[in-house]
Length: 260
Image 1 (cartoon, rainbow, N blue to C red):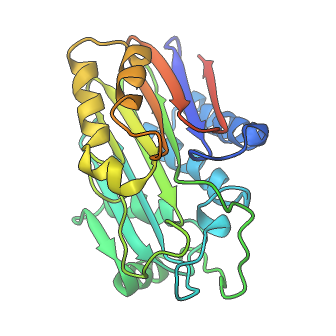
Image 2: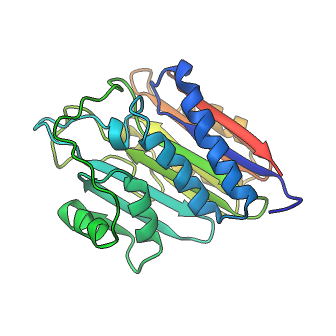
Image 3: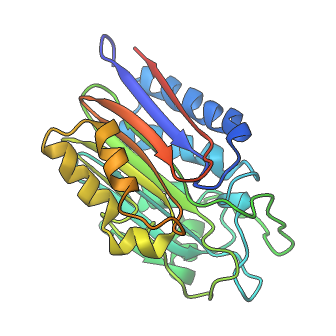
């Protein structure tokens, strides 16, 4: 959007290696280029997350961790300040679950799960990938994500392979609106870390409420990190009209990029 400040932030998950910020740098670069070409914010956020899904150092897409039965079941979600929200849960054998979530956001549905989400992805010709022999390079990382602002609209996107070794039916915070992410007229928030704790705290929506009360992102970030016990990993990306912030109580590869 010419003449307006463009902002994108991306993270590789709470617990990800800070040295892997070259991956989040690349996600921000691609996302910013899309924003500069006037691509809608939801699409830009989702494509940034796709870059992270394709990087096996992170726990999403082709880097996803296995459940207790050896399967890989992924969750993804996206939302923009126009109240478009879409999510998939426990989807298998799809290279970029975030793109399926974006398709759901543009449909009459809000959340699709399991084999039905997989079938929906096949009907829309999304790329399949055989994850049978997958060996993740990301044993200690959580959800990846991005938030964007094009000077007018906000968006957030998340993707995860889930908690390694968990039951196949386990669902974390990612596909639950207001838990892992939220976007509205005041800004966008995405969280990463211990999914059950993020869900119980309604983390993303409560953080967003702070932005609505005029609290700046850095102050909101510091407050939210205090909601969690030391044993619970948590990281956030926040953007509002008053600025942006990112951080975690663990190591976390993350990047931010601005432009016009």
